[in-house]
Image 1: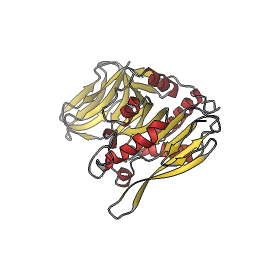
Image 2: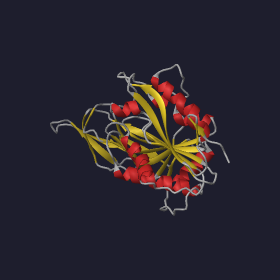
Image 3: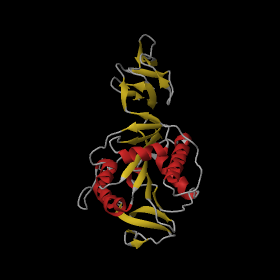
Image 4: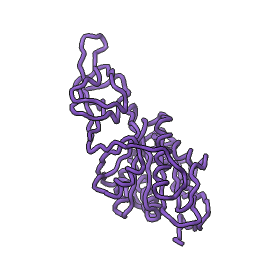
Length: 312
């Protein structure tokens, strides 16, 4: 049987163990831990990481992983699940995407024991978690007032990752090249495959995205023959590229399409007007595709991202 050791704790076949990895202290000297929950079947198989809250204000992901844990949604027949519902505790406490010094954990890998706080936590994940796993699902949301329709992002050059993304079965599979110093790229450099799920917006719960994330994870685990559940069927749409339409003028943004809608080139997607009704500027689609992201902010400035169009 494969040996599994996290933070000096050995996890044996058939065990369920919760481990708290000490990461740092608050200025009040309150100790901050990184809780890790391991569920290991008696039979060896893939080791899958399920994580949320890499950005502290992306609460949907935290709730998605929390529900999997608290409701014991997956009964493993083989393999191991490693749950980390909340990676960025500091950002979560301050309703912030980043750490107190403004650093983004997802741009801090592989990290350093002597670097910034974000870099130190990245190093813990790089040394303690990534070497153990075969693949993972990292749950994210859109930004402030920016909603993402449930989608999974993967670099299409990673053929194994693309295969797993299709099995995951989110409504959209989006080609997303690896970003330097990100969690996903660091894992890929070590031969692991991380799928990035996006759904909803930061600081707002979206039940559709939570449910979709759970069902997609169920499909993936069934595909890996780790559970015996029969998941709901899916027909993911494969999107080769995407781009944001940006505002040409400032004003009040009034979309006429919804997130997830199919759109045609030249179709009016929204209008931007001044507060007095004197100026009205249409926002037209530049291509055929699907609305995979939408700005929910009614008052916008020139240059703001408005509608994210994914294209086949």
